[in-house]
Image (tube, rainbow, N blue to C red):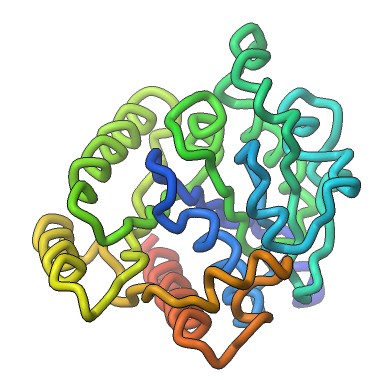
Length: 272
């Protein structure tokens, strides 16, 4: 068996990018972390599971190209391979989302194995998967779409905005992860918490960072994502910030985060 063949049989690691609060940098993190991981020579798939489809837009996928989307995957009308679209970033594909996904919460209620629909689709795809990592961009809620992501994933990555109520929201999410681990996915773990929209000129950002690190310790990544106008501009051009402006502080931060995530992944693999 060649080196390429041996790599193909290794199941990809699946990470859900989750926070039930909106506006915390979740989709921005999914898009730019995936791009940074691809820049580190990893083969990456992003599954856009948010009906707003912002991750798909962030990769420049036009609305008319989203006929086979994550909704079709969930209801069994398309496979992962049929829905995946190559982005302009080498080694990075995306399963896009469309507004059709907004009805999935209702339709899934009556389906068999409703919490396992995404997991089953990914398992069917895993045998011939070309990916090292699959990142799932979740909607800002803890409904059936996010539940599907948690059941399908090996681990959770939580973007956390440096704001006053950050810890309160994180505690609720961790309780949800614990419930999923007990009843649906015993192997689910928290890969890490990343602090986003960090402003060193703001005492509140420093205080929130200290509080989160004091409460959760090494679960929190050392890398923080700063407030950066180039990160905010990039989606309007359909580009990850690393493609839009690789020299900006936001792009450098996501590259640092990717390296830290991959180091943590290697440590977990070695400890297994």
